[in-house]
Image (cartoon, rainbow, N blue to C red; front, side, top):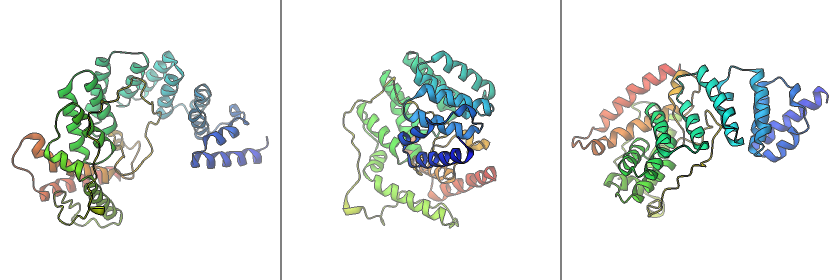
Length: 338
């Protein structure tokens, strides 16, 4: 294969990956001898194609080629751990994990790898809880893994811990997929939602609309006296078709599976303001999230607005006080970012 034909196939491959057509992409990858390729990022893309087609052995072999070309990336090691687990090779996963922790011993994601390895080995639920507790002690605003921990608490019969964690999720994030799940999980334990939580569930559309307005204002560059959330002022809100948006709060049992889907993304792609994960590592310059400021503002403001009820303090903070604290924290974020 000459250079022109190779470049043409790579261009087609990238287009197919971008469009999400991984089956067609694999038809291209199968025609190329990747041992002759030296671009680590291209090899990582090829590995992703095989992974999406559940060809984990090929995915791992290609990713190892990528690692040989550029052996300094812990992102590749993280993916190697997950691919080894998917392939059922726990000893290899543990070797990659060991190498990862040698490169970055303080990285909180080592606990996620530990958790997946513990799952694959069939470790007891108490051990898995301890691992996720360590992760959540560091990554306090990762709603996905907070909810995973809440589910483990429920499965272990630690209902008070489950309820407390669900309350934290609703307090910190206000709206979003995991807030809905946390509300449903808490209700499934037999513990009623608080009046504030019920308000957030029943008027979810209002809070989401306020958040979208906030996002538009921020993106437009209008940051004067920002943010002024007025989360409790619903007088100007007109719900679509005068209906409230609700979620199911039935008696569904939490689905906690030891074979939960494994994500090999070290820094997941953004899926919108409400689903964006904030990581401590963003402060270290490893992965700057374009919606980081917005998410942080939302988390701080909603947390402060609801702190009274959660802490059983009758003196709630005014929105002006909340705005002031958010503004001060965002000045720090801007300094970190630049």
